Image 1 (cartoon, rainbow, N blue to C red):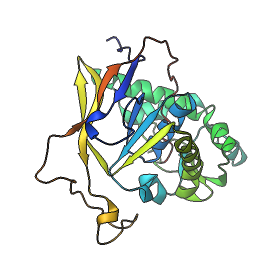
Image 2: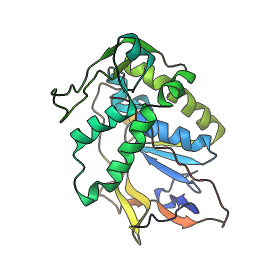
Image 3: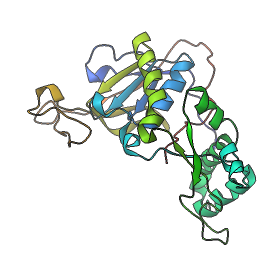
Length: 264
């Protein structure tokens, strides 16, 4: 299967009928931790990114905010200090035994897993430390293996972040805010994505609806309140659609690193 070349495509979200939605290179669905990381990494490389999120701004970071802040890391100083012997080969063997990649459709999940385990065993720790993230000196044993190498982590790999979930989010919230100020990232809150738009086997956009804004609600939304799922218009209208169009034939570099979803 040949991976389609989409380097010279841009997102055109004209059907959302909101100012500033045209001429984005990349659309990120969801402003949780994985979405923030993907948006920041793309913006660092000069791409213009729109992030579509069904919640309000107060929910930036999503469920990662409530997490313990555990990170999957391999062969770290924290492990070695505790006498834990780990390496890339062992971590990849544990991952494969647990995942059970045994179907044709597992090709891309396996490729992602290979890249992620290699990342966790190499640059991930230093990449996070350069952003100011610090680790608790005790390594936990989440998803502990059953002892025979058939599933789970055969050694402790659960590294806790100082500050737990909010501590993991802070560097990416800061980076996203800087990119938003410069115009590289645009957030569209209360925008719910319901489906991907396909054209000739290529994902060219997304479709969804704009939800009621918290400013018009009786009670302001917060992280601990359930937000409304009511659309702005009633009765329902045709889904808003983001469609792709070709931009100028200018060669641009591709993003080769895997998306860094790092919260356990």
